[in-house]
Image 1 (cartoon, rainbow, N blue to C red):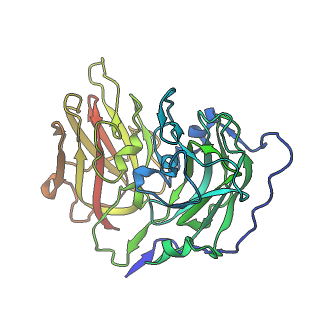
Image 2 (cartoon, helix red, strand yellow):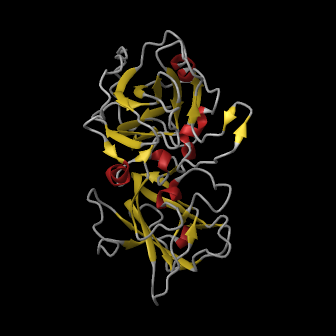
Image 3 (tube, helix red, strand yellow):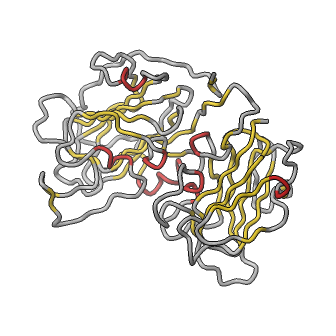
Length: 374
């Protein structure tokens, strides 16, 4: 039997999609591209990122470019002069011209059990003249073995509005805050007016995990899919993100991990602070250097902290050693620490935050903390 970590307030009153406004101006609540990461990333993740195994369940049309591109974690790219059988290649979702219906749509299943939405981003990068005019975003909460089938029915009545009609603009990245934090969603529907192209669709929010009813069952406390969140990092270089440490799987290449710049100072260390999805007792830690063969860290340390108040600095006096002593790291492999390698492994200490320190710098693909909820 599984239980919700937080009981959702499921509101499924279908709201009609309003017609697009007649004015051509931008919305006054728009967050510009330069402020999007600063607004959402310290406390949110992209709930529909392909990195979390989010999936497109269905679309009205994707003649020119597939809707799956919407969920890619990397920024859109352009390949001028490249053509495919349907026309010019675009890194996004593009539908046919002359849509006989008011809008095209794509239904997305979140890559997490459920989430609370705090922001929506729409990026029409490189779509200029073929960009969507506007969008509406709807959400619903459906669980169970038939949930996906239910939301795909033509007569499904559970969609409710998350973001009202917003103008897209040509080759423009923009976002909007959502005052909908207390209602969980499992699926979202992007409605694109009337047709055209969108490069990326991001749904910023917090994970509401589903835990087993048994508190003794081992879970991955640090996983992004279970509510784990990177709240601070000393450095993020070469297009990497410390948040990648908490993603599922081991990746397919050196991309999709956390890598820091080469240090030139004696005694240098890099670090990342992780808020666990639930306060827990640790049983096992995994530091994975998959694909980092000439740029892995020389060694690492792990510290933990308990409490509701987030650590103020990496040197916070409340940090306690979790892994006994510093441990050397090697290239392209999983390093597992359990048993006597961990302090208080029998549950004498519970943690809310973990800090991974790498010496002196380098790349790590995944950082996993397994244990039981305290």
